[in-house]
Structures are given as structure tokens and as C-alpha cells.
Image 1 (spheres, one colour):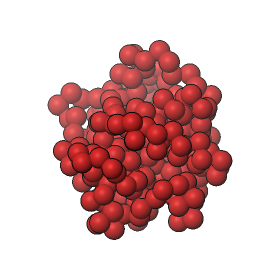
Image 2: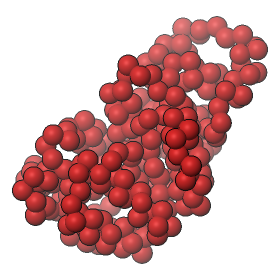
Image 3: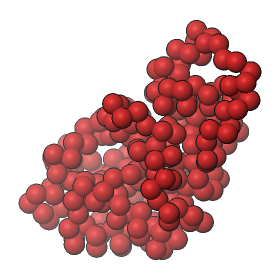
Length: 250
């Protein structure tokens, strides 16, 4: 059955609704297609039927049928440790300083960092996690095949690269951003917002986090432009200054 899920995930580029319909209508697959499906990927995978599949994902809206990954899949198994950290496509020196302080402090508190693929804040988070060998789950939005094709530096002991789709469908880019956000919310016990502009549009991620009952934290900004976190705090996001502020709440 796991190979059936893999087959439909590849056929429909991770589209949850199409995969569900194929399963519901018992779409036919030849034995040859099932036998050969493993040859079509160059990474590892787990399905919703796997013992490694995290319980925190099973109960979210549209849980992924298949997760493609590179790295240590055991990192996905301890939900209580997981802290999501995200931000906008621009980051200033203040933001870099706050991240450089926060991440090692979270490690001291035995927390695992989760972020998703994006330039700016998220890219800075990944760079520091690599440099400091922090336990990290990095969620891809471009499809794991695309990321592996363009990235040489992917072998890191403490980093799990993970994605709901193997290869993206070019006309469905917005869908994959939504998939990435859903995965981030499902795996994270709480999510920290560092810096972002209103134009970065985090509405989907924030709404997803609220719907899934996740704690939302925000680092206050001193920048006139990168002040999205200040507005998030006014809306009820929890102001944080240190890692202790996060640990005390989750």
C-alpha cells in the first residue's frame, strides 16, 4: 500500500485532493507501475502508514500522504522539542543578531529548529543551523528533486530535508507554499516570527497556525519597514526576547 501512495504522489505532484480522489475511486494501477515506482526517486520517503510518520501530522487538515526526505528521519519523531522559526525575504543586522542569539539558546533548551525554504530570514536560520550543527528540520517548497538537483551541500548530520512533493508542477506554485506552511504548522509546537514586511504576506501561515492551535511568538522589531512582528504582537502574538520566553509557554 505504501508503494501505491508513492505512485499517486508522484503522478499528481503531491496534490492532496487528486491523491485522495485516486484512492477513493480506486484508480487502477498496473503491477509493473507499482514494481517500478521506487526507481523513480533518488531520496527516501515515508507514508502516512509508516511507523515513523509523526502523530502531530496525522490530525492536521489534509495530512500529507507521503513525505520525501534526505537526512535523519528520527528528527521528526519528538514533537515536544519542535520550534518553528520564520520571517520575511529581507533581514537586517538587528534580525541577524537576534537569530544568532536565539538559535544556540534554543539548543541549550534541547529544542529542535524548523523552518521552510525561503530567502531572507529562513535562509539565515538554515545557515546558522548548519554552522552550529543544530538539530533542524528544513521544509522544502520547491520539491525535493529540484532542491537535490541544484544543491550540493545537503549532507548534514543534524538536518532533515523534507517535502510533501517530489517534483513540483510549475502552474501550482502557490499550492506548494500552502503545503509547506501546513507542514511547518503540523510539525511545530510553536512558531516564532522574526522580521517581515506586510508585503511578505504571512496570512496563510498565521491562519494555519491559529487553526491548528499553535503558539505564535514574535520578536519585536526596531525597523520601520520590517515591522510585521510588531503588528502581530498587537494582534495577540506573544512577545519574546529570549529562548526562555518560548520554553516557558510550550
